[in-house]
Image 1 (spheres, rainbow, N blue to C red):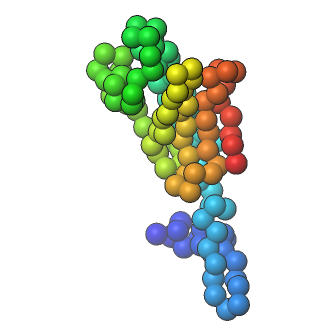
Image 2: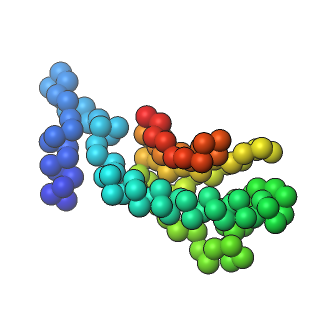
Length: 118
């Protein structure tokens, strides 16, 4: 509770006698949380690629990887602590983000790298 009060005190703007909170300005993740989430995400990325190699398509949802490819889907430790996954015929997208959606870290299948989109 003390952290929340401190964050509100630091990340707020006083506007016409009211306090306007800036949720997008709150520190949503540390460098360690980002690095740990990317490492966890890389594990999932590898298994998505193995799934496609075996079945000729991307999984419909991450839970389709369980239990054959992963015992469970590990959660990221950054942002809202859940994965967002989507795909089309040619590529898939895996990201973790804050509740508002930005900033987020997303895996780019073209470059095989993660980038921050804010």
